[in-house]
Image (cartoon, rainbow, N blue to C red; front, side, top):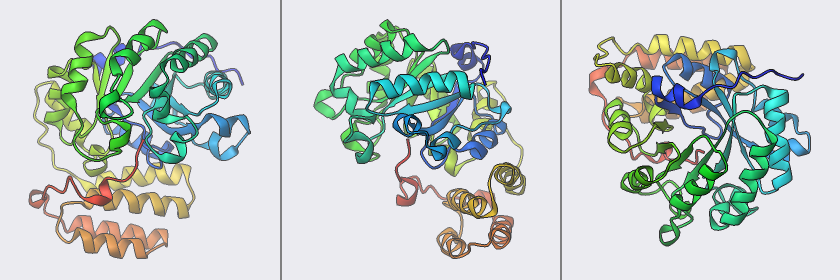
Length: 344
């Protein structure tokens, strides 16, 4: 099927709503993207899709790229080490999948991705990066964006050079996760570095890392010269983050009650639309565990929840726990280890 994709201006989208859903492996699946779009996210991007997997015709890989029309503009995030496979995958995304843009991942720090020269490994070889961007950009008409880390490690941070190459090759924006490859997800994201880059390069920058509340989301866009921000783990603890940030941006304070009953009904609607009960139960457990973080008895709740596998029982557990909550008694659990797992 040749999809006729209307070229959209991603930058225009960011002017209207600068709060982008960060791609996260194992999380930003088709159901979660629709759910977050409904909850106020701007642009959404798939989880990591292997260009090599596509080259070998993997059905599992193709499934990662499914989307609902309400998700537009939707980007597919590709990674890989083979330049031809990446180019072919980008063409496939445009012509067969009909997505609105291609996002290349040079940020993933996971060893199995990096050791093959994918993810953040290319940050060490800028000639190869330029060749790749030129190749992919020349093969597609939809916009191309990239996601990077600040560098491979602290001494070799080179986002300014990466951004210069990206700008010259016609890339639409660069998403910068404010940590180096060697940091993984440890330490704090270095927003001063992101700001320094955003101030001096010509290409639009999306900052990413440690955005946990609406106030931070707004200050990061307004005070750090970013065209937008990518929000990842923050919305796994607070599904209202996008809506609240948008309200705050327009000068309103969102006083409506945080209704988890509504949240889970919407989430379940999308899970059931796309997945069988087994997968729905798994995703529901993950989300409920994250959303419970910081509330009373949440550790016990998570323990009980993960013992269950029956979808109906999981549903009941979730309903009972969230109905018993007092919204005002949440503690800050930002550093909790289970929230710090490997995402995109």
